[in-house]
Amino acid sequence: MIGFATDEIDQSAPTRAARLKWVVVVDGELPAGRAANAAICTAAATSRAVAGLLGDDAVDADGNAHPGLPWAGCTVLSADAATLRTIRAKAAARPDFFVADMPAAAQHTRVYTEYLSSVAGTAADGLDYYAISIVGPRNPVDKIVGKLPLLA
Image (tube, rainbow, N blue to C red; front, side):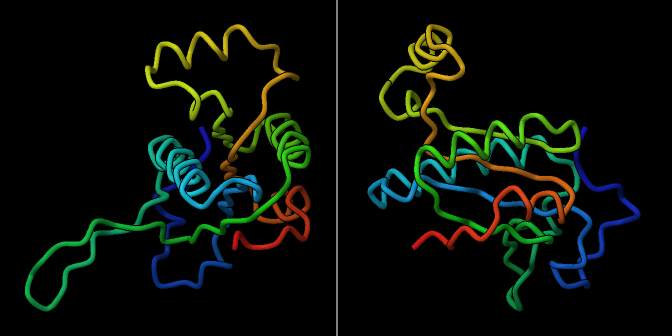
C-alpha cells in the first residue's frame, strides 16, 4: 500500500517536504475537456487508493466546510502518447509507486462494462493512455517524468 503514515502528515510543511510526490501526466494533444476529464478521473482513483493524501477540510469564517485537498500537492504535466506509454511502463514496474491510468477506451465508451470489455480485449502494449496518475518517492518520480512541461 502506497501512502502517508499518520506521523508523517505535516499540513504545515511546504509540499516539497513531503516524502511522496503526486503527478498526473496528461496527453497534451487532447482537447481541453477530454484532458480535464482524464486528469480528474485518474485523480479520483488516486485519492481513493493512496492513504493520507487528502488534507483536513477547510472551514471559512462563516463556518462553511470545504472538503480537504491534497496537502502534499499535485502537479499536472503534459506528454505525447508515446511518452505516456513509456512513463506508465516505468512507473508500473516500481513496487513503491501507485499508478492509476485512463486508457483511451474510457472516453470512447458510454457503459462501464463496455470499457472493461474493451480493455480486456486489448493487449497491454496496444493500450493508449489519456492520463496517468503516479504517487511515489519524490526523486524517483522526478526521474521518470523528467522535465515534462505543465499542462497548458
